[in-house]
Image (tube, rainbow, N blue to C red; front, side, top):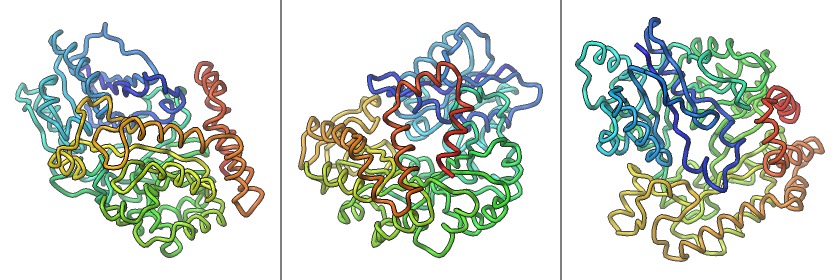
Amino acid sequence: MRIKFILPALTEAKSPFYRPIKYSLFPPLGLATLAALCKDEDEITITDEHIEEINYNDQPDLVCIQTYITNARHAYEIGDYYRNRGVYVAMGGLHATTLPEEAKAHADTVLKGLGESSFPIFLEDLKNHRAKPFYEMGNVSLHDLPLPRRDLLKKDSYLVPNSMVISRGCPNGCSFCYVSSFYEKGKSFYTCRIDRILKELDTLKGRHLYFLDDNLFADEKLCRELFREMRGMKKVFQGAVTLSSVLKGDLIEEAYEAGFRSAFIGFESIRKENLILENKYSNLNQDYQKAIKRLDKLGIMINGSFIFGMEHDTLDTFKETTDWAIESGITTATFHLLTPYPGTSLHSRMKEQGRITSENWNDYDTRHLVFNHPNMTKEEAEEGYHNAYREFYRFRNILEAAKQHESSNMKRKHFLYSCAWKRMEPMWNLIIKQKLFPPARSILVRTLR
């Protein structure tokens, strides 16, 4: 069977704010994992529209489309096109899971939740002409999962081809989290076995590695095993962790010894009342500054995530948060406007209150305010969001934030990393156009270590 996997471009990847490097970071690992579940005799291709055009002149037997909320409309157009040609279309991913009936109007089959268990069953049913309109994710186990088909990925088109996950989901239940809606009716956290993880690690050549887990440290026992095994590998890696995991015990020290050099941390809000309302319990009663200083002393940079537009935010929150991030020495910041994704408890609450103002999924990109806020207008919120980015990445503020570190090495790393990420867009465009990712990756490793 000829099977074509497609990741349609997110709407924001085609907007005036499009940054090519942001969408050339990681290959579509989920699709490569599903491809590994296909039969040896199947002919498989993977198309990531962020790095290449979709070839519409092919003749696949099955098209599988991965949906997110801001590529949903485009995904539906692709699905309609292939169905009109008589090609069987299956959809999955976050958006198709949360709104399966909507997705089903543009697909023959919708697979909800994780596909590691349901996708092989669907393929067998399809080959025997008994495919169903919907598939639940069923009983999922990652223990014997085959390695992703990385040979199908255009690795030279990504800055970080060496990305992987050791788990699925997150044990936390933040009200705004899009990922939590993916596991609404069952277990929300799964892990791979250590031997499976090490086997995959062994296939990844080069020093740099990015763990794409929603919460890398969620399984402490597994992480300790992994980090001890990684000590002699000379890897330099990045990943997302929680504040509580940074402050608890000595796991962060073990991670550093294994090569951990950059932590993505969801601070989300500097107001306690916001954290309580949105169930961000992993941040409650945590000493933000103590965690930051602990990471700084070790030599681990921070990419901080912040959400504007929570219930208790005011127009002053944008500047207060940006100033706090600069004064705290946060290396890079990712800002968002609170977005009530379908399937989340935040969406249910706002829907019940009659506060949602748009159901145009293209607006759900965390750059637009899509609900009525008690303390600011849509225009004020969006201007505050853009101002936060402008202020945080002003050259003088990058210098100011870099000065907050204790060691000269961390000051240097902060300055180089932050400037490269946000102040050198023409350089990134040249790297992408000329396929210069290998030397760029070498510079990244030298900066991180």
